[in-house]
Image 1 (cartoon, helix red, strand yellow):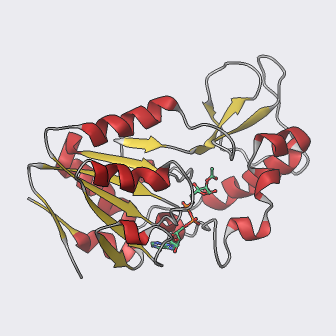
Image 2: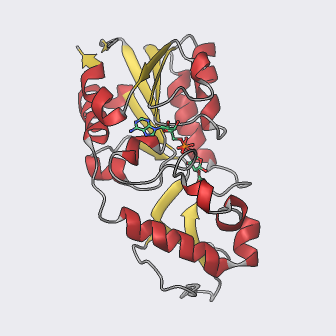
Image 3: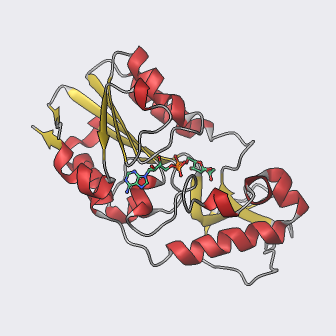
Length: 242
Ligand code: OAD
């Protein structure tokens, strides 16, 4: 297997997707038994779907909360947390995952691009999003204790914009001039933008790019290096840090 050496003049941006949590028992979205095979995405993961049937949306996310709550980080998550401990501010992790397992594994230089499954916010008022691990009984739509509006999962749905601050953090890290850039995408099909375009941004800035994925993802040809395999098996042995 190819290995990636990170020296003191190098910074590492990692982008993760659902594949990273597959070995922890959390289903991915596309292919085989993917979540989107059995759930109409426009009904459970869009603002229109929430307006039409908020209880269906809450049923979906309550099931996902209940499914993800007992799951533990796997060796892939732990390897990335270890890279961060060694690299400090020469490391940034941007994840499309909402399961929170990176944080449980110890990652702190972390941008959760698509929000967090265990966070709820109000769909009407400006109150701060808050931690909420409840799986609501079927048919329930929880209401805001402050304004009475419908609460919603703190997830970026299809048709919604990512948080500008999150994109800026990734942008600043990409644009730094002090070190050589390495970009690595792990366990993502490369189907959802803007994360799917990070590889092009990294290449334009002269970065070296790696993909670690169980299957050749749609955008695999855009990476300099492709390592096929399960992230929990590949990552612990992939990187050496000087
Ligand atoms: P996908 O389900 O689209 O892709 C997961 C990828 O992980 C696939 O290419 C699999 O081959 C690969 N994979 C599966 N198991 C793996 C393993 N053990 N190790 C490495 N790779 C593995 O998931 P994402 O790319 O994360 O958004 O999907 C992106 C976004 O689309 C999600 O964040 C979600 C979804 O709609 C929202 O819900 C907002």
